[in-house]
Length: 396
Image (cartoon, rainbow, N blue to C red; front, side):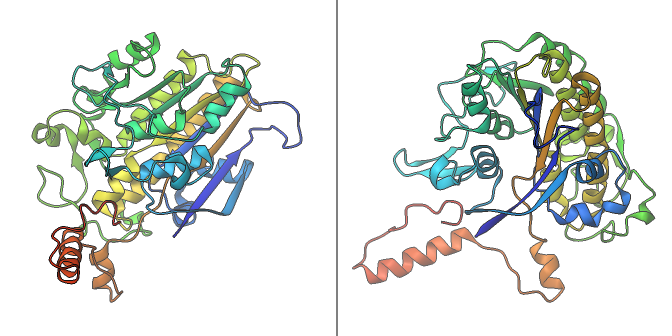
């Protein structure tokens, strides 16, 4: 299977033939973004976000990485290493390790401890990634003088793009609402991030109401608001706007509810702006690198589907996030002094039940059923040997 890849580049005034190097490279990955969303929602995007990237930069429309499965971990690793899972080693988000005889996570590292949270998901590092990343190569090319920072709501979305030599990788911690790290990088959080966490922005966002950015009747690129293909938020009886997060959070301890809304992208944009200022990225003659991976579109896409008004609203708001980030780069680094690229780690198929209800041949792969059937078949044909298939991992 070929993984289609969308790449948008904004050169911010830097000529492709120029010998001048950008002061800062910003790599943006939108988790689960389809290329067709650029066209589907185009009329509702403003001039300063996606349209600025396509208008002032250029779009690479036909690029492929030939691998499967197309998940977050392999996607991010493939984008930043330039190779496929067979080489870089990130073959899934999780997989069955036949030597350890257990399932492992792509960034799990038992040797590390969380930094910034006592019980957070901080026992992580990029140690399972076997190839260097473009961010690693920048470090090597500059004798480690370049600064490399990775940010995401997901740990793997921050850790894998930032590479093995990063100055820091930071991700969202659901129990505390803070951005945290691991001891793989440093024993403590940087001062700018401590100050950012002290603002308690996650708490502020969870006290908001998520309603449509535009009048709901204008969301003609999506299906009805109330369908059987959407997940109902805990505390609601139907998957419809508005979502009163201040009430819904009472049924969901911690801050994980936030990342399933577009306010998660707002928070990540705030963190990216804080990193640009706090790390003084792009302030000297050595090129720095900031990776920003937006995870909320993936959570919304999984829970609501590609045809939901919630998803369209998420992308209309993400368009404003990108505009906000580009404006901050103009202000902090300077127009003409930075390079931005935007791509996705993977896309998404339409809801299987939706497709089946609309007469398309579709269904759901039941891994447990396949495993049982394979073992039964092999048992009958291998003289009664039980459980030939030890595990099925990522449909393999």
